[in-house]
Amino acid sequence: MPALEVRPFRRADRDQLTDLVNMHVAAVVPGVSVSVNTVLSDLERQPGEFITDPWVAERTTLVAEQREYVVASAHLLRYRADAEVGESYRDAAEIDWFVCRPPASFWPDADQAADLLMRACLARFARWNVRVRYADGALPAPLVYGLPRNWPHIRAVYERAGFRHVGDTEVILIARVADLPEPEPRPGVTVERTLGECGTRFTARSGTGALGFVEIDTALARPERHARAAGLADIGNLRIEPAQYGTGLEHWLLGQAADWLRLCGVDRLVAYESAADSTRLGHLTGAGFRELTRTDRGWEHRPG
Image: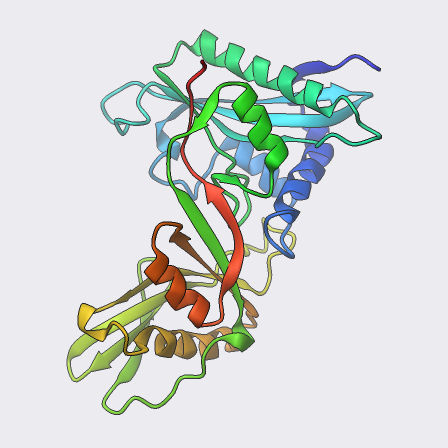
């Protein structure tokens, strides 16, 4: 087979790298892809990560090339070691994302390419001489973070290299807006629409008191960056007062939000919950959501 080469990313790789990224995105989220500009911007800076991105001291992107084709790539971050950096990130390095072709009849040495690239990542970490080594799968696309269960080939690469899952597992859920509950009349309860922390907030009020709220982010698809993500929104927050548990207020709030989403031209709504929170998951599945995937957050290099 032609020799594999691992080298730094070059701008001429941008189209092939974007194709490889979009193959991985498509396995996680229906109807979403990212543009070349999105990928290139992510290599330089991640403005959405407004807390952790300023802590990054160095970034590098590596590719594995065979037959003049990019078959794998990884984006690495090194965090500063000063006191301004959060304790868990201080003097840390991270594989921000790692993508590679799965083994196939027309690419039988895909695993070899992935392992060669991983060895180069670990060698870079060794030169950086950092305190701790992390890994993730945070591609620059909505809903793609942690290590989605849809990428068993990436999980295998991480585990062969000595990375272990030490964090939590989250469930990503999706619903068609048309399937969300219709808001039944609730005497004495009104809805107020304001700007919230994570999007447009719909607050249920009785008199002067707030009974609960849901926040909807309809800005997942930035037209200048994402090629296809139209019609997708997510729940930023969903909270109700303890006294309202079991009253159906969550479904009523989602019904109020659904009317707004239809006006926005949004047809799919997503939500995220801890896999350990069966109560919250039950509320969402009862409101028309179904599981899209699970993703494992928090990978640390612990060889041996």
